[in-house]
Image (cartoon, rainbow, N blue to C red; front, side):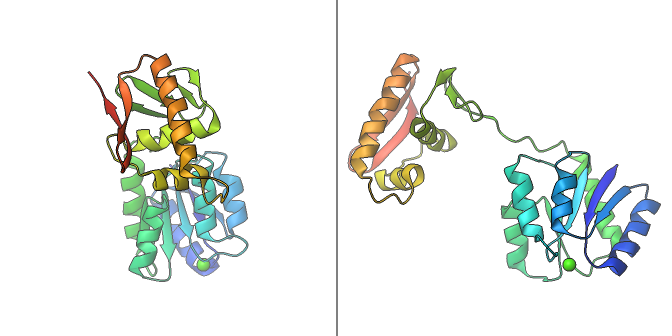
Length: 220
Ligand code: CA
């Protein structure tokens, strides 16, 4: 097992590395966020132990960068601030665990072992519902290529099928804060998307809930 340990406080790092190695865990140590990203993207690690307060690039930025690049390695965040907010933020941001400083190295080792025993996190590449399968990388719906807006729309629906999406919400999620858009865009694109579903002979329909919005349902 090999761990990437990112910690700028050398005296602390030395002590932790000594104990990790004693527990038969191989360690690469770096003292800043930039080098951490460079090494982590190679995908050689079973786990990353990541301090939050780091020079050059914070632990948060390292975490965001890695997750954005689909690096699914388990990450344990370390923070000197034993605040609940930080813990929630870490887990919400895609970290797998969180440990407040000061911690016992035995506790860290236990967490590393627990995380590396788990099957690796699988980053979703496909969203499915009924007879539909949307490929997030290729932007295809059952092999049919969608435009950027159609893709954004179907992704929104497939992430929460049978959930009612208001026009305002759809507009905000798909068009952002663009001031040149209006709710009529939503209606137009909804008709494009319906045409594609028809073309696919899908049993999945976009239902209009009058005055409220749209939702995806399966019509038998
Ligand atoms: Ca630090």
